[in-house]
Length: 301
Image (cartoon, rainbow, N blue to C red; front, side, top):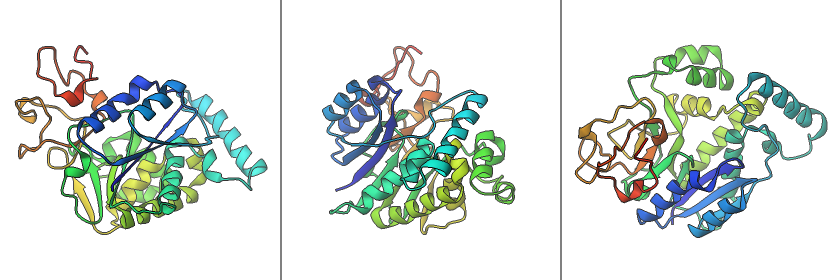
């Protein structure tokens, strides 16, 4: 059996996460889906039950998702104070920014599984759609990672630069600046390799714990580990050539769709996992053929 691990926190409505589960089950995928959930609504709970997902409640105590810098600084200061002054004996991961905390959940859950899965897929939840069974791709032993649009390098993205600065160092940020951005939102590996990856991630987050309280440093660490090949073998898949399609900064041309409307690789194969689809306006236009997996995509946008 294969396993999908994902996470969500309060604030997301059920409608925002249904495309993930609807498309996954419509693809015929029978894998176990485990959702680490913090303060989700009864509606979300019912939806997850409907799609046979296992819900693991997560007592999240960290900073909420805030936009204002001043709000983030105040919330971050409070989080740091709670950890360093009052809560040193408690589980530290509960105080990290949610994107960082989830990796501790994933590691501990996999470590305690009685029956180890063959493949483990770590996935974002809100912006992922499955066009086919994600495990139908012939993944090789090791870790398989998604490279974002190759026309834009790390140095061209403030978010990527910021993530590396917070998670590594100025030197590493400059050294890796001309490399591709490797997305942390969709990662596939066999069980043993995934455990090595999660040990690296959690250790890295613990080393940069202060920044981990304030922001998601998972992307920077993921980029650093993969480009330095700290896990071997690492399989890189660029857009339009593999199992992942990371849509941010991509342009979808007519040649990228088949007659049924599925997004396809250059060789004509259907891309199983589509990430960040909500960042592309007009992915499907009125009157255009829309595959069943895209049932919840608003074609009028």
